[in-house]
Length: 485
Ligand code: GLU
Image (tube, rainbow, N blue to C red):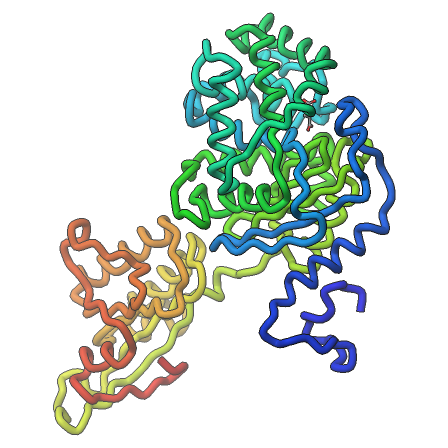
């Protein structure tokens, strides 16, 4: 079997399955297997322009996954610390948005991939802005927007260190050796700083902006820190462990967008098509991958390819994406799968044989999984088709216009997006205004029906039995024509 995740696949021949205790998770074994496979790639070289990085132990490698509920898996040299370098750019961009506001940030930094080297002395024609916040010119500008325009190196570094520590869930520190080594030979970044000043993009002393930026890049992390930081982005800005909102949701979207288009230096297109996960890499050999709503990934190995991305880190991410189906363009859930229709006929119980709903139909819409715009649109269409006027061009439509009750079951719905919720609220309101009886099965209250906003309200119950008792009287039964409910 080609996949190295063979022991989790259905098709693995029984004889191949190693004897493992069933209560141990296979994920750590899998991560070790991914590392071993990546180890065979000996290409690349560590970053040469920062002495400390040039002398890194190139045999070290590690990987970590942080889930959106805070569970972290790690393997390899997961305790080894390395400088965060350019990975900090994603998080400092979020801080710049928080401190200066998105309009000001967009006025100063573009969002277009540049296709240039990360340390190119380049500005966008016409606007004079750096092309994006992931190249050095944009990152130095973002750094200068943190705290305030006249802040000191210490004030900005302090703000960034505290914010990154909160994301990682532990106190992080600047690696002074890396900082000194980079500052010693910072001519290129200083040149970028002066270029930004001359173009009117930064207002502070360029040496202050560049020195602070280099301190920001010298903050030490390990793979678990990075995976957790990434998981905060995956979790829409809420820390998976503390539950604290750290980054506003709109900033998360902005950060993930530029990570997708500009995060992997000048190989963004190659990365998106091969791995398909918003990502950012750094010259110390770290990479984060951030799959919204699912998993924060971090990999580390010091040898870089000619574009500055960790050779083994890229292999690790590619393998994870392939084995786990993490590519963001994989079509994993079709909208149609989230809505299911059935029709039940009420059979009155012994105690109430003359119940007015006896022998009448109940239309049941079940929603499953994460319901978003397209799922809610299908539901609206299904309601209109089943309960609306018959359409001569659509045989079978309007078949249940006289149903006594409409039931919506959210028992298997994991979440509703706010757009889906608004559409479904409107559907329910329209049915109620039409005089229909509506029953909602919603044990975890995903519909968030608010009577302050919706003056009419449906009957909300915990389960199917309660729904039946309400519709047909205690003890009634329902004969389902198309499905069970
Ligand atoms: N400190 C590095 C620089 O600006 C960060 C580069 C990187 O990781 O891409 O040169």
